[in-house]
Image 1 (tube, rainbow, N blue to C red):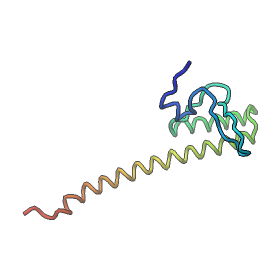
Image 2 (image 1 turned 45 degrees about the horizontal axis):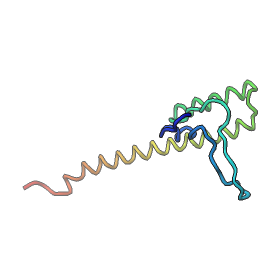
Image 3 (image 1 turned 180 degrees about the vertical axis):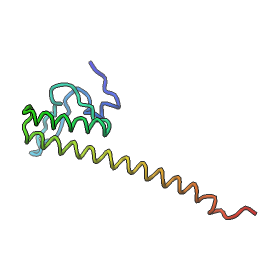
Amino acid sequence: MTMATDDDADIGGNDSADLVVLSDGSAGTLSPPPGPKIDLRDPHAVRRELAAVYRDTRAGRLDPSAATRLGYLLSLLLRAFETTELQDRLEALERTIGERREPHARGPNR
């Protein structure tokens, strides 16, 4: 029996199937695809997976329509990472600017 960790949520959840509601309103299970989990925890890993999808498609091991769907989903994930990184950097810049302005806001020391 494997224990789910916080990192598992970032790369596909735990090993058990999850209960989901299907578009017709019925309940079903969403099982993970067979094989090992794919590491998608950072932009570098996503880029490696995109490259693997490309190589597998070129070699005929992956259907081009499946590759298109996977590539689209991976590009969305990559964009989410980029947006998060930009947001973090912007917040850091705003904090730095705020700290530099703070002494000036109080006026000169007399």
